[in-house]
Image 1 (cartoon, rainbow, N blue to C red):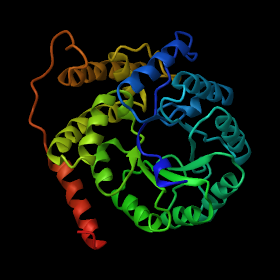
Image 2 (image 1 turned 180 degrees about the vertical axis):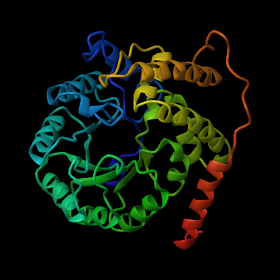
Image 3 (image 1 turned 45 degrees about the vertical axis):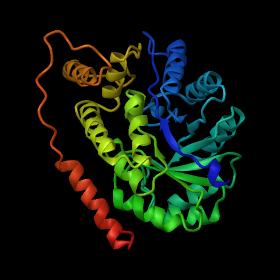
Length: 339
């Protein structure tokens, strides 16, 4: 793979709209795909965590890719989530997604059973040696066995099919150590961040793009943030990162993931339906309250009208959190002799 073929840009981990019976709402999913592409996303990432892949059957996961591949029609590349419970089913999914024309697959490290680094290596090696499609490692230690830097480096060295890693740990130094370990030997290897709260800093230290759930709700903002950062217009990019952080925190911290993102997408005009994870009455009440907050945040960006009763007066943004992130970036760069 040449550097020009590397995975780069914003790949959207999309919500799957559901109908009144909890089934895949195909027409709305197709409309959503067109909407995302029209707003400048670089690629699509179905069957990810935001797409609730564990809450669909294997047949439904394939059907989701079939619909998206057909609707996309080659306009943007597809990074298909192919995380199954074992290597055989994962390889079978990889083969089908290759047939459907996907650019690559993203595979999470083994979940349920916590494996050692040696076990994680063996798992990915088995898949990479037996799949016809390029593989993106998916590190999400909150839910699955972590992928450490030596394992990433070893897989990159030994497996040509392993072409990228998506890291959702939010750990900036970990991302920097991976880039420093792998890029000298594999300059075409791609690094994608799955942590919306640090998209700008991750891009600044060398990430090629992101798979960010917020892109599925406000693709206009994340695409502009990406473009401004790469253009070196950092003051403007920093302002967008602050605003993105506020929306991201509201969607991810106040309810069961990814219900906040589903609620926000509904406010952007899509029939998303109820998620398949049952909600208690108290959870539903909290989600209703969150919807008003999200409507206010989207109204500030011009993407929705204010709710009945209006919105609270904005308070000044506290820059401390992003300042700490930036200081951490500079500190790590100095340690590596890069600043």
